[in-house]
Image 1 (spheres, rainbow, N blue to C red):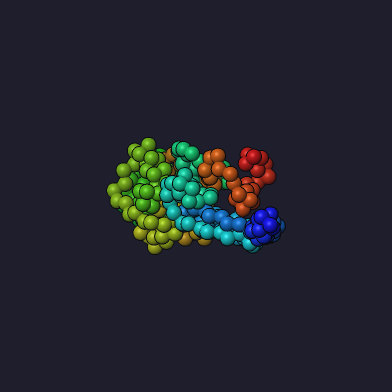
Image 2: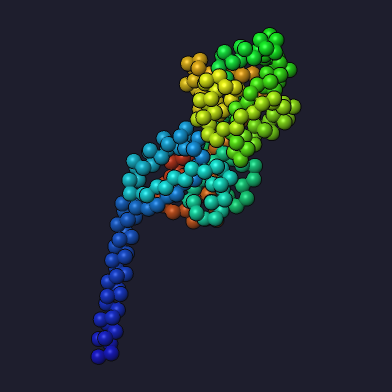
Length: 251
């Protein structure tokens, strides 16, 4: 009798376990899962969206959450475990994070042709390609820059310091899209990522300003916490971002 009582109690428990196992198997077969991604607004629009579109099409049962934050905020959330993956510009120090490069980006200064012509006349510059003239142009421009908490802004501030360029006037703007739009109305010379204004440069809406020395390129890619155990959803997304040659670095 005692065994019969124990059997009836355990029967429902084992049934629940079997149902749970069946559900897990079905979820794995369908690719059900969750993925949280941290990314800046700029990188989300210009770089991440095509990858995301492909990933969602190939993994329709994965619930994707996008958190638009700065690189430093994303890194903090990764270390705290509140994000799975961060799509960021490569920082100088990675601390407890793994970083995999996806592509290189180049920072440039752009303005309207009219703004540049007026500035050259005002400063009596005849050859802006000369190093000193290029430095003078940037020093006397109204520079349109991202806010100081942005990793791109900090990178450009170091470049200006090394080139001994002290701009007379700066306007801080929160997003790259607005920086580009303000440049297009002739408000000043904007520091932007060249990859993201190719259309404007081809159409002539914006022109590239000469610089005293080339601005070194930077890397963007994805990061995740070291020693983390990536889920199936994470692995599929990371493999999508990397080409076949670099996928072995995930193993």
